[in-house]
Length: 396
Image 1 (cartoon, helix red, strand yellow):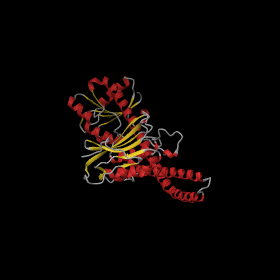
Image 2 (cartoon, helix red, strand yellow):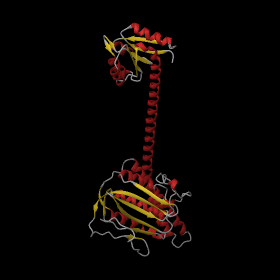
Image 3 (cartoon, one colour):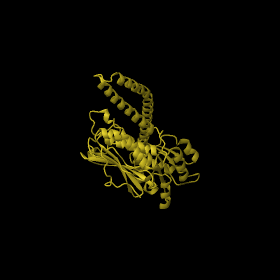
């Protein structure tokens, strides 16, 4: 610490010279400027001072006034109070007003260590501010990049829908033309690829709409069973084609949620279960859990390794699709589920045993029960209907 630039606020020139000699004696020659009025301090406060040293009581100024000027015009410059005699209560008051330290004139040997501490603290504060500014700038850059990505995905997803729809029309014509032809298999593969492309576009559009804030939840009381029944009915054929038993357990629960978004959550979970189950069954049901209902999708699929459970909700992550088979999707389904659950305030939990299956449970606020005479028939893709008594439905 050498070549200090020191602003002294003091009505006594002798005291200012005493401080300058002390600094020089300690090996720190200083450029010293003394002021004793508010106007004088305001006239020079804009210079690059290393430290401000102020007396307490002056005929035309005060330490409180000096602190106020410094706070308003040079808040980052260390401020040390030097006084002949002052009580502990007053010293604490100065510190609360923004002073860095307090030194008695009779103990000026403590002044240099106090200046060194104050300057270190000031530099640390400047470093923190620079880091915070860099962090804010990086965050703003990231937000702009995410916004650009979202706009791109939304535009690309929308603009690609029209040519994909045209491809579907060509595919239908091709199927008719190749009916009974040895190349008929090509048309079937073409159709499977188109289904994968449409699934990709739908998922990208969903992600972009959620991230851009275009999805606004419409939360209201919703009968849970019709949602379960619709999803299971729509996916029953797909499950049956794989030899899976997809069952929906009846429930009379009424929950507080957005019906359309909940249906999308459930559809993604059931589709995921169907994709990663080669045999066995998938059960969709719910249980009461205090003031909530846990809507759970059970499967007997491949399971999820424990070390990967934190990653399954990441975009484009898939547990067992290293070959990137588009028939198993692209890894956006669970990411969409997590986004929608966070938006609706519905916690989601996962339990899994590798090689035996998984259970995804979404907690929904319970608001009541549907009338007992309302239709709550179960849905099953099993060849033979099975007794559902082993699974407890959410009943009143």
